[in-house]
Length: 259
Length: 158
Image (cartoon, rainbow over all chains, first blue to last red; front, side, top):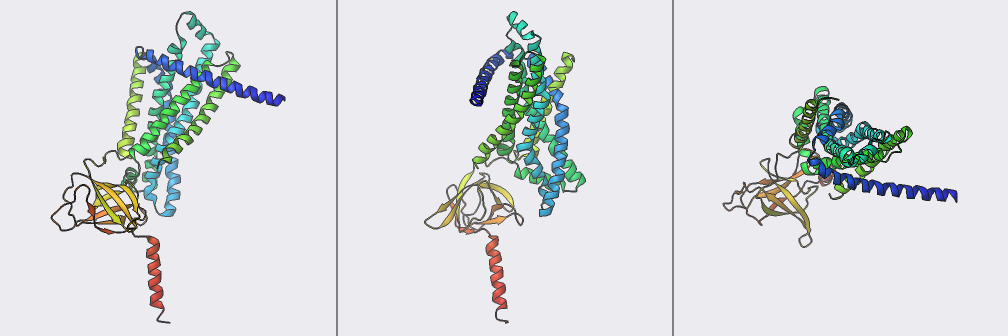
């Protein structure tokens, strides 16, 4: 009986949180409209969320591309089609690894920082202070962070894919001796702009919205104690990663299902 | 915190680099430069067997891409495959008695349609169909034929 009650409590709690999160997103979107006049707030957040995440994205993109080059070469050479290495590297980066790995790193690097920052603001009653001064904290604090994340994410994913392709080129052409012409021409033949590249961009935009949404909501909804902020940061990373991987499957199934 | 000017510079650099990366993906990795067929005209051809031909496959002449396959359907009156293709409007002087062959790029590559020019003075226009066609080479049939010939040769010598 008690376990049943506990189950019911969990379900009601999570539905309630989901409802609050949706209302919160609505308010944030409303608040974003007013930011057009004060765009500098967004620029500040693009710097904090995007530019400071750049290094980890570039380094991991380079290494993911290089590993793809090595692994792909060793598999493809068995079938005598090492020339398709460029296609393999580009497709796996543009379609999957670019958006997904970027979103996971983004959740770990930028999402957790956002949650901790907003959670601490709440714990030190800065947000309550703003409300006292009749400043809407959602427009002033949350919406710029949300917009900054949504703008930064697709750019980061594109940079990840581009530098990954260069990494694959470095290993495949420079180290393993794949023909450079074949590497690029096979890639250009096989990668379609609409089906592959735009698809990847759409994915990264969706991941950007979801990751930043979760991060700012968890921060805003955190219990205002140091413990509460810690568990909110923890939840941000876990929920963002799960949401990204789950949504990735759904988006891939939707786009590949038409073919 | 960094100053406002430096921050703006970094954000500008970041956004420019991101857009540059997207452009590189679009032009260098993808094939945005080889634009779709413009002002094309539609031609049909019937094949006994299209093998592994797919929609969007290339239509080439002398090895140069001049169009693409837009539809493959089955005609249950003639038991043949009906392939429709769009050919670029720039290439208007393809003789009416040209022949369409389904070819394979490389041993195991994609299949595409190669058009061999004929000798007639009238040219293909929108809605026409190519009469002379040659079906896809099906590897299994080819192997079967070779085996059959081998056994036919070796049978009398016994």
